[in-house]
Image (cartoon, rainbow, N blue to C red):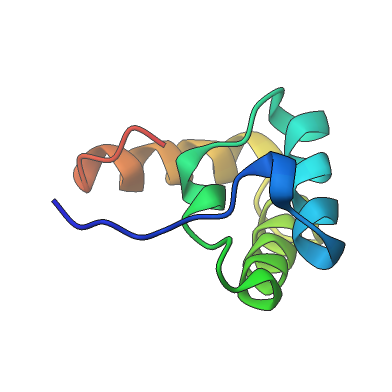
Length: 81
């Protein structure tokens, strides 16, 4: 198993702290998928911005359809996220 040193919420600053706080508001916890990007807060921020636009932005697909696609892809990839 790979190991990546992550930044703990207690030591987060700046952009990373903002992203951690947003994650807590959104999900009630900071998932590992967010923590794994903590060494590079700008990438984390860009990734979360992309996710937000895909899931909440204008689309011919409903929010429910987008969620179903995300679940189907995660299942196919054997990913619990």
